Image (cartoon, rainbow, N blue to C red; front, side, top):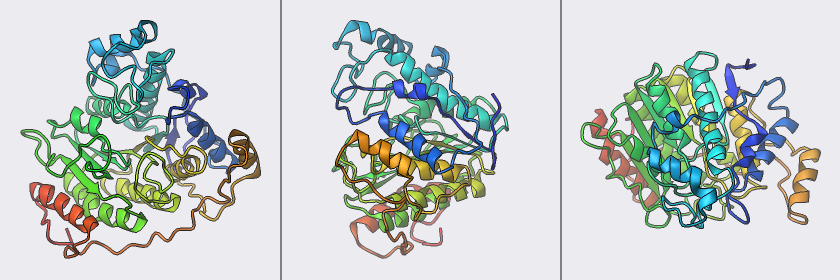
Length: 395
């Protein structure tokens, strides 16, 4: 299928992604994806873009990062009931019909994005249905059955690339991707997340540096609760650009969870949609600077389904496509009318902004706030391993 790329970008989407549905009142409701695409269309972000339809990933592709026995368990789970092991059949990861097929399609979507970049058909590609970063080699975790992020990275490593940086901006630690490449010096994994002291999965400490021969390729910035836009951006710019410049990746892969938002019900950071937009713009700039523009963007967490995720990921789609949306743009009436039917009486935002000021003071190396101490700890842990001075704000 051809892809129209104003800005050489591919958008992977098909309504069949909505089949990844954990059911009932589960926080990961696929309505967030539907509402995002509806909003992007209503705002004209997707005008003229031929969406790249995904195909389910073959078992052999999923087995790049998952055990064959685990795939067998996922495939059998809908018929086996709830006692299937491998993290399946829990409150976080309930069994649902066609679970393997729906999960394989998400992986296939991220593979389609990776292939678009590897083929040269697109410099950037985005799959908002992806970003299932918690799935481990032999078990489901954190609403994630298969780890599409890791499969896409593994595929890229076998198809022309040998230095890949993965930056995870979800509120939860990107533990599954870190685990998959912990011993692989070709992959730099960077995760900025709420401190493990106060949020699941309880991992993501600065001392998690990478395995033998890959020291310094796992990077963790553990942020204190209630970190706002200015603090988050301060931490990001104090750690991520210097490491990416030192590592020199050929592709930047990002997990762009929207659950850092102040309204998210499952976590305690305090970013806004305006902060998210700044994050996406920073990632785009870094991809241009360090990776010849190659940027594979994935979705992730985000559980304020109506007020936050659709606006945040519409900004993500727009950023990938170089069709940036003015934060002051009003939400289209047709989108508001549809979203209002899903939660009658619930107030919806009126614009693509939360009205936040995203200005921040760059890290200077001498402050003693919990945020700055978190930055210091991350820099001291990994910067020397990349030939950088952790105490010098210019590095």
